[in-house]
Each structure stands twice: as structure tokens, then as C-alpha cells.
Length: 399
Ligand SMILES: Cc1cc2nc3c(=O)[nH]c(=O)nc-3n(C[C@H](O)[C@H](O)[C@H](O)COP(=O)(O)O)c2cc1C
Image (cartoon, rainbow, N blue to C red):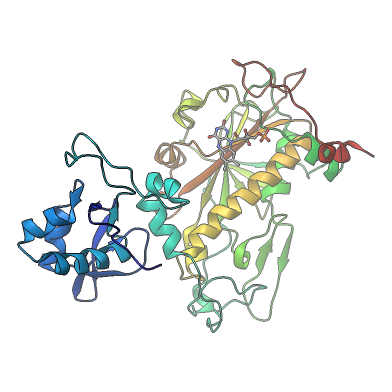
């Protein structure tokens, strides 16, 4: 798109989320919506400094003591790089402070405006990863996703964590009743739970089916790769499950780490869940009585060892979604009431679990309890919604 300053009365101002960063030996200014910028010359910085509010091109020319045509060239260049933005129309009067002009907003801009610069930088930096020609890394796997740098096989991080040393609880083998169709039809998010604990058998099924290693793939002389019910980029399976068992029949309440290779719970000695669930899930109503809460935390090194592109971080978050869906479907199959939430107090959870949040950040929380009887009512303090099943929904109900 060719940048166009518009008419004589166009107003300009600095775009939000303009960054200054060092590239090589020089400093550049760059919009958070782009991957390119311009050298941060004194002139560019002076113009951007002075454009905190709407200004006419003539005002800019006066301040810079520079002929208007030259200023137009400069501003057109800054506009092309999204470093400034222009008003959609000129204000009715010259008094810009009282008549703020409408902004020419591009389609889809609103979301990025509120999420930027962080989300936009991450999104841009992880778009359009080049797959072709990426060197194969040490371990052989089934996919070629994301740019990679070879890494010595010997240094591959283990797919399992070291034993935390606490008492172990052997879990019964998973027993998953019902059909996929039924589970898909029944799955809903619940934020209230009937009194009573979750049977240990059900917890074992939830953990074993969702997080447990179903098989090991052995390829040539490489370290075995875990395979689970959910896919994982490069079979890295970086997400570990930490269980806050609050009310599980035949299981002492407390914090546990699920060992996906051996299907046991390791008690996290000396660590306790907080007094209230809201310490982990702030601003969330309804989970106070959740009998089971599971926090997923990614061992980043497992992924970064193989994938050197920042896109790999996207992959981890996507994988958390896969696992959460499997967890929720299993819970539905077990006639439990599942939930998933992104509204979590990351650092509080990491501290509580004794995790180094930089090496193993928490990214998602799921949980389950016993369902309340009656029609689905996602919020205890609100009326039950009227739910109208579509033709597609009815198809799932048919035998
Ligand atoms: C990534 C993600 C984050 C979510 N975060 C929250 C949350 O913070 N709090 C909450 O009560 N529900 C949360 N939910 C649940 C949604 O609100 C719920 O899925 C939605 O209302 C649709 O209802 P259903 O799951 O019963 O189909 C989240 C769901 C997803 C997929």
C-alpha cells in the first residue's frame, strides 16, 4: 500500500507502540506492527517526539523550520513504516485540542492496538517461518515444523523430569467409558460442583489418558520419543501436569506431580496449595470448591533444544489447548464436570509448585469436579442459559 498523507488539512501523530531498538551497531525506530524500521536519526526522533498529539503538516514544517514539501516526504516515509498515523478527515476547525479528529483505522487494527506491543511483536516475529532448507536436528521425528538448528543428540533434554523425591502414589490403570461422540456432546465448562470428591480411579483416568505416555517411538539410535493421546510438535511433549488434589477419594489432599512415564503421582513434599483457589485463579468465581486442579507447566528446554524459532512458543501454547481438550473430553466421558481457564496467577502457581517460572512456566489450568444435577448452569450466581441445540448438535445425539 502506498502511503498517502491525504489532503492539505490532514493531521498526523505518532503511532502507538513505536519502538526504538538496536540492530547490529545502529539504532532503529520500528512500529510494533512491522518487522522493518528506519534509522533513528536525530531528525526522525525529533519528529516522532513532537507528534505525541495531532499536528498539521504545516505545524510540523514550522517546528522543524523546513519547507513543507520536504516535511511531506519525511512524513510520507514515516507513514509508510507505520511510525505515524493520519486523521481520517480534517477537523472542522483548526482548534485540534477541542475537536480531536477521527483516526483512519485499518480493518483488524483494534485488537492489535489493545494487545500491542507485546502480542503484536510476538505474532509478527513468529509469522511465516521458513520451513524449506531447515537443517534437520539431532533427533529423528515425524515433522519438520519450525526453523531448527542442529543440536547434538547427546544433549537432548530428557522427556521426563527427575524424581522429586516425595512419596509416590501408584495410580490404577485408566478406565474410559462411553464413546467419543457422547463425550463431545456432553462436554461443557462448569464453574460449580456438587459436594463430594472425585474418585481416585477417575483422576487416574484423567491423568493417564491426557498426560500419560501411551507409547515410546524408537528411531535409529535416538533417544525414545514419548507418544501421547494429544499431538506435540516434534513429540517434544514439554508440558508437565501438576495436580492440586483438593478432594479426591483415597488420596491425601495436596500437591502432586504426575509422572507420565510411570503413571504415578509424586507428592511435592513441603509444598501446599494456597488457602483459597482464588490465589491461583484470581478473579474467577466458581472454582473455589473444585476438587481437582491441574496446572500445566512447560519444560522449555525440551522444545528450545530442537526448535530455535520463537514460533516454538506458539506451539507450546497450542499443545496446552490439545491437552486441555483431551482432559475435558475425558472428564465428560467420566460424567465429571470439567473446566479450563487462562485466568491464572502464573507466578503464584509457580512459586507454590516450586518451579522456576523462567525454565518451566505455567501456561494453562484445567480441573474437574462432580457435576451439579439439573440443566447445565455454567455460573452459580446467574440464571441457566436457554440452550437451543442446532441440527449439528442433534446429529451428535443420534445413535
Ligand atoms: C483458552 C481458554 C481460556 C479460558 N479461560 C477461561 C477463564 O479464564 N475463566 C472461565 O471461567 N472460563 C474460561 N474458559 C472457558 C470458556 O469460558 C468456555 O469454554 C466458554 O464459555 C464456552 O463454554 P463451553 O466450554 O461450555 O462450550 C476458557 C476457555 C479457553 C479455551
